[in-house]
Image (cartoon, rainbow, N blue to C red; front, top):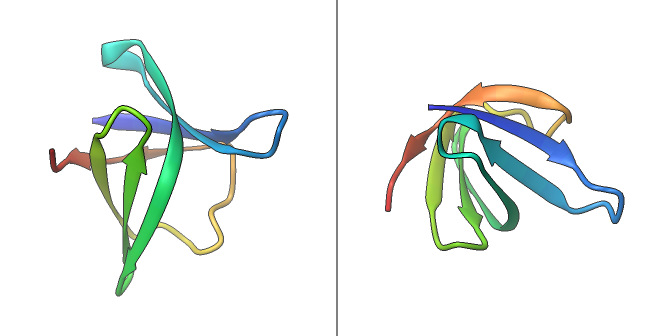
Length: 67
């Protein structure tokens, strides 16, 4: 799925999933080699391959939902 990553006015990393009309705060970031797992406030874990660190925003990435 495509996920739009952006920073809100308070400086928090946010993720927007258009197909689900869902916008949630990223509460945890886990780095694995060149990949990242982002945990959203609603409990979703999103696996994103090849995401740069630190994350450049705004950007649209392809993600896979783990939970």
